Amino acid sequence: MSVIYVLLAVSIIVAVVFFVAFVIAIKKGQYDDSYTPSIRMLFEDEIVKEQPKKIRTTKKD
Image (tube, rainbow, N blue to C red):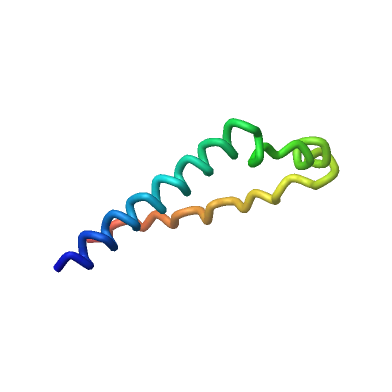
């Protein structure tokens, strides 16, 4: 039973370490994308497909 407590404590410590590393990477700008905005104008916009028109049916008596 004591092994479960040890594994639980170790897993929480590892999770906290990875979370702190992730927050530090975000604050330092690791995930900022500075390349895509400069080349975005080179790509054509996607073609917008028109929605198919609904056929209206009339009720005949």
